[in-house]
Length: 114
Length: 112
Image 1 (tube, one colour):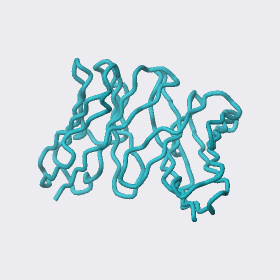
Image 2 (cartoon, chains in turn red, cyan):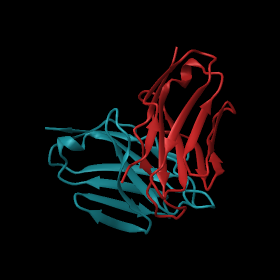
Image 3 (tube, one colour):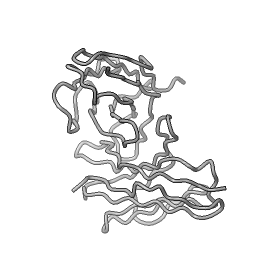
C-alpha cells in the first residue's frame, strides 16, 4: 500500500512568487494535515482538512492557503513568498476523525526561497 | 501559554540507560497523546499513543499519562544509539476529534 506522497520533493522559488505543494494521502484516509518545519525548529501546524473542508488553521498569514479535492488529495499554496518561508513542508494523513487515529507523514517538500 | 511544551534538550544518556522525555499540554480537552520520533532530515514516525491515565508499555517504550496534571511522558528503557532522534509529543485536541498539534520536540542523544 502506498504511503503519503508529496510533490515536488524540492522546490526553489524567488521571493514574491507563488508556490504550490501537493499531497496524496494514503488510500482511504480522509484527513490531511500540513506542517511547516523550518531548519532546526519544530513542526508548526498549518492546516487541517477533512472530507473536503478546512477544519482548523494554525497561526499563519492568509497567504498560506490550501484545499482538499474530492479524492482527498490536497494542495498547499503559498503566495507572495518570503525568504523565511524556506522550510520543509510536511503533509500527513489519517483515516478518520477519531481520538485514537494515527497520522502518517509524507517525506516532505523542501521549499527554498531565494 | 504554549499549547504543548517539551524540554528542547539535548538530553544525553549513556547506552543502556533509561531516557525520560516529558511533555505538558494546556488543552484539558485533549483525549489522546501521540509520541513520534523524527530522525534528522526524515519525517516523523509514530512510536506509540496513550489515552488512559496510567502507563502503557510497548517493548522498550512506556508512555505515562496524568490528565489531572496535564502531563505525559515517554520512557525508553535500555537506550540504544539508534534511539538518538528528536521526540515529538502530540496531544489531539479540538471538538471534532483529531487535531495534531506537536510540541517543539526533545532531542535525545544516546552515547555509546
